Amino acid sequence: MSVYETIRSDVLVIGAGGAGLRAAIASAENGSSTVLVNKGSIPKSGATVMADSDLTLDGNSLNKMGFFGEPRDSKDKFFHDILTQGFYLNDQELLRIYVNRAPDRVKELIDWGIPVESSEERAIETAGYYILDVLYKIAKEKGVQFFEDVMITDLLREGDRIVGAVGWDIVRGKFLVFSSKATVIATGGWHKAFLHSAGSRELSGDGIAMALRAGAEVSDMEFITFCANTFYEKSSRDGSLFTYILHFLLGGPIYNINGENVLKKYDEYVVSKAVSSEWNKAIISYVSFKEKLEGKAGPQGGVFLKVDTSDEKKIIKAVESYFPGWNYRGGDFSDLKAKLFKNPGVEVGPSAEYFEGGINVKPDYRASLRGLFAAGESAKSPFGANRVVAATTEMLVSGEIAGKSASEYAKTADLIKPQEKTVEAVVKKAEQKMKPGKPIKELYEQIKVKSFNLLGPIRDEEGLKDLLFFAERAKVDLADYGPTYSRLSYNYEYVLSLEVENMLELIEASATAALLRKESRGVHVRSDYFFTDNDSWLKEIVLVKSNDSYGYSFQEVQQTYESAFRGKYGYFETVKKLLKLRSNITGGH
Image (cartoon, rainbow, N blue to C red; front, top):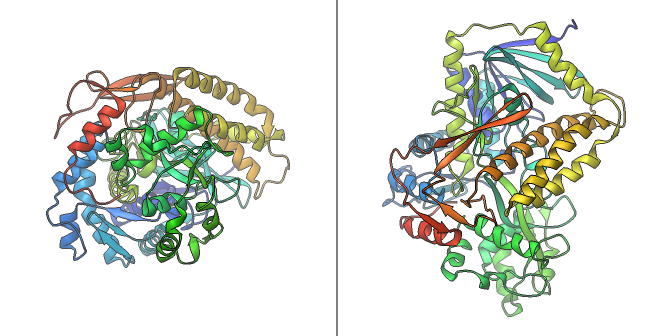
């Protein structure tokens, strides 16, 4: 038996974005010794640091805090709007918790000193790095112990209980064992698996994948939000939200490579609502991707934003008032000025942005395995089939609950030392990916293209089966790939090998769920089942892995507070009905 450095704690939190930091704070505040482990630097990694970012809550609560907020709004209206726009697939208990606790979490951040740049009917505007800086400061004050640049490779399970995890210290090139009474997974989504991504490229779904391998349930894995009109370019700017925000500011048509205004092909009412609200992520992503499937896309597979030259001065002035010098997140986009007013325009398209599905959790954010909890994008969201409000608020709400729940569990649980054979099995599995082989990046590039094309904004049976076959084969072929250099410290090819295994795990789970759901709902669109069926499909698909294959069950959505309309409708007909069900207070993205 090898000897590994072991770190013991009451609660282990994996991931240092907003959800992980808030979970760690809640755990420490509740009296538990708390260790937080992160694959990158703290607090400068994960999805939160890239958020723009708005924090959403009902307008009346916002108004009472002294900000511009709609006083006629209410928590019930806010709940109703999220539920209808989630296509009624929301876990209504989780949604009620989100709506009720959002004001407390937002006020808390403000009291802790977060800068507020502006506010609207249902949101305050700040920045993701402001959120992380504040949470990191509070977590340090509470005594949380941090481990940076450590990638957790797998959870440690004894019986039906999670008792810790094994991590790879990227800097020192060695394995660490984390022994804990309770574990919170908060590693975010798996944006890295897609050719076009609006998220951080370090987000490879590690936490959800390791939970699956340990035997935990996942649900809603078929639902992936693609942000529309993101910048398409073969560079580090690919997937940038600059053009998404630009279209929000300017409005206007979207063109295919033939110069046709693609929005004119669709229902005028639906388009008018979609281009001016968060609905554009579902609708415009579909519209753009359909042009690609029909062979009318640009060189990068996108569509084009182009502006009437008669408004050139006015438009440039409007953009510069919002983005001085045409700068966004430290990037210079001034080269787009000329392209916006010339044919064919600026190429844009959908990019993977948010994952509604994740580890299946109860209202206290505990998973199906004892000792395991999840928060943020790693957990099943309260947003159902379509997220139209801020995930940043949700990560704070779920993080606080998961951290406190894990701490409460730890108070009555024993610290079980992982068995030597359990640790050795996990380490041996991870060591296999250290063997030199074909460049792992080659397989990774194949994964990105396949997942985006076949699990993107439009799916069908043939494509999903093709993707599952590819993932199965790639998991076998993975043994032939590996690092091209042998050093242990800072071996990011080795890290990518571990990430690729996780991405393949989630592609398989997501494609399996998407194949099972024979309808179109929210951001899951099947071209071969282009309808929403509220009679047969108001249920979540729950997956669990056993002996390298997936079992599944259907969990009826409990309509505790509000019931869905019944019937089977064409997809756009359903969207139209849902848009008309919204309250007259709809501010906040």
